[in-house]
Length: 75
Picture 1 (spheres, one colour):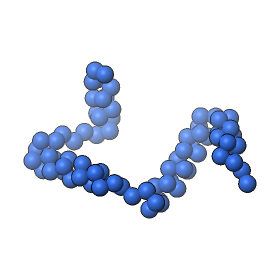
Picture 2: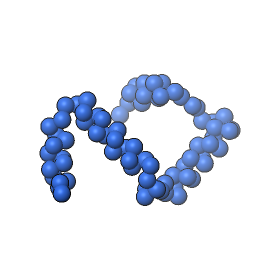
Picture 3: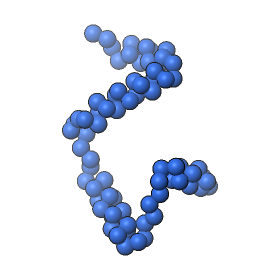
Picture 4: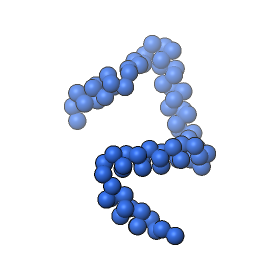
């Protein structure tokens, strides 16, 4: 059996494109699992955001605009 340390060492040797493929593979496996349910506070935050959207007090941005806005905000 391969240890986590051995897997980490092997992953460190991968080129960036292969590391990305590995991350994507891991994410797919995790995202299909019910082992990590969303916490209650997450549902509450989403409900609050949805309420603000319906009231016109929340702005929807596409991903590129959202990244640009975050980059432009002072730290």
